[in-house]
Image (cartoon, rainbow, N blue to C red; front, side, top):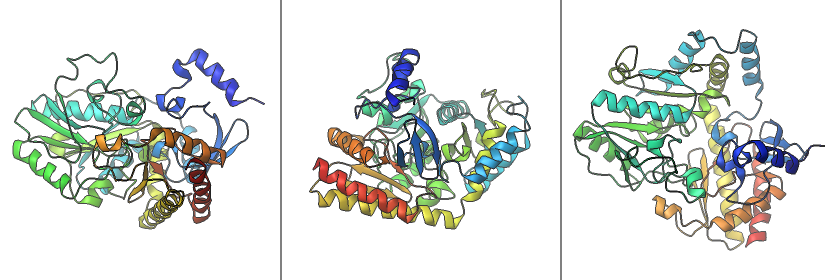
Length: 418
């Protein structure tokens, strides 16, 4: 039988750090990563046959559960007709229509291959459309690994304690201004765009303060800057219309990913028609991609979106609420200071007494204690993301019995680290 240790050794010999995304290396929690052999619903199995209840769900890309029959069937059927054409397909049109129908601020959409590519392209579009150079982002918000966006990002950069990345030149980030989350900056007429996660989900889970999003919308309008919502995580995860539906504030441009691919590689950005028409070939802002609108990804994404009606969101919200209650009770019962937050369907753990509102607040979480909790949960058959700044993802497969089993494991794990 192939073991996790064996595969890890082989991986580190041929792949930098043994992984293709840094968080997977378990550097923040220690130990040897498991290698997934298969997954179904809320469960996954590693190559050694160990079974885990999964709260990672491909970092939110999976919402219907692993290997959902409708999504598997859609991919299989699409694959029989070819995997890539370098030409436009009906699937691209249908998923663009589906996104526009669900998000009221989006008139037109451009499909790409990842969330990172979506945010990079949206920023280029904002600069090209406005003729301005400056970009404002918020500390702790993660928008992918594009050079101009790595300043004070959350996610894996927070785990590794890196403010940016070697290889990103000062000139690259010279026009990127970083401000505290939940504080509205005063803008000037050089600002092309303000980009943010409307719900910060890469520095733990930090909701927007009351009135923050609307005040930011108003400030952008005052100086003619575009407001970009990075809804790669929140899009079609919080609600049918994403964070914009939940909070009642519309963006000029929105970036998407994860859910809209049904677990396959995809990204998208969209917005008001007059802004999107600045994209080539309609306008002067260039962007292209050989695999953009891949037929397998659009088929999987459409199948996923078709599953997400009001009843589905009610079920996921119920699971998240139940999970939040279990985790809060587990930490409280073990005498551990912890804030278990929830925003609609997202749940986050902050190992500290107070709920975080900024990146500085978020970084006060007890990372060492989280690492111990991670391994205690893993030993009890529950897989969390291997980093203290990642959120927990429930989906349609997280039934009451699954969530209750996670809760029982959490109570024992909390006592073990208390």
